[in-house]
Image 1 (cartoon, one colour):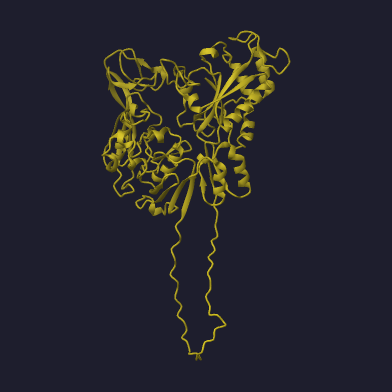
Image 2: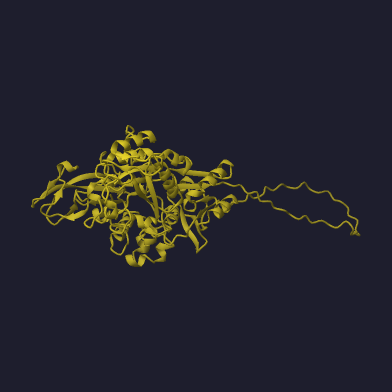
Length: 570
């Protein structure tokens, strides 16, 4: 695939409003009726001056923050299907951020320790080292070509010690092979406890790893399959060792989030998938603990009495309430404005709500907090199609792809569809990414230059009309073929609006686009059923994560999906 990219702003939108509600207390005064005679003569007596008694100060009312979500979480277990892949996973993550704290935060593409003493640093020689080991036939290692854990055998490639690139890959001939593996140590903060007061130790992290490792736990196994050992060295230290050849660039995050072995250790991994202790009543080390879960309505959390940052006067609120409102965004905004919600989570805010939210912000009714999300909206050309799409190599010529990119006014899409709350990147890395290079050449929006390039390639406007251009001498394309293709994208306001704008932009260049809208899961399903990874599409518009380690393999030939490589990512 080759790609055009644009940055989605809607991945991380949160709104907050702070409303002061004045409460009036009306007291009814009592007095003697004036029409009643009192048959006594009262002689006043001198009264002593009253002694002023200072009123006992009342404690301040508890501070409560109400966060409104879309769906009710199905499970709060880190390794459950519902949390990992379910429709309410975002809502579950919001709740878990109050129960857990870290253990590692990612801020501006950098790892920051939360309950760890520091972040391992291989270059600085802190808690991370590359060690040489001897590899024998039959040992598990990372194949540098397939990037998969494999059993070493004669004829397979491997990275000898000191080699970190494809230029020095060797072929195994048998016997001993000297290779490298990563060893990384993580140190917990001392005297951490769970919210029930029990010590939180390195063994709890190892317990979490062992659950992730187990076959009954429905996790991807990506990291556990690339782990040689994960063990506790003492009460606060855990050590991760990767399989030989796995020189993980994100080694500093290879720490398993602890789970309370003293509570969950009596369950099998299969039993934990339905156990209340972890799905609806998990404990953590973070600022809050679950006090009440009223199904279909709300989750009430109170301050963790054993929170390790309590001496810093944290957290800021005494109670935290997560309410479940459903998908009615109008009702959600109304409840924000009436004070029934203090914060609307992003799960309640579809892209089409952005204009009205901005209007309310300008009127001073709420505050909209946003940041470009950790996703890149890409437009990918299919350069290795199968099925009907393989009949004509419309995009084999790089100049055709460049011209199409030059016909798309991405800045207008950002300004009109996302109201300016985004940026147009110049590559598949965000402009904020530490590996981004500022000197990259961009493809500007320029219809004149783009149409001239199409003419140069051989895409002719043969009838001076609004009909699509036709091929006349285009490499790999039969003469007379129309410059017409399908554009596949997922349902949703943002992507459908982008598709409509893209269709209009390309029409001005003599390019015909037919938009196909389908389910996001159907598009992203693996080979051969997936609409994208099945390689039957022409052009697809879809989001990809913007991770710390650039997803270079997305453009590698070895990652093209096929029967031999059904999970290829290209």
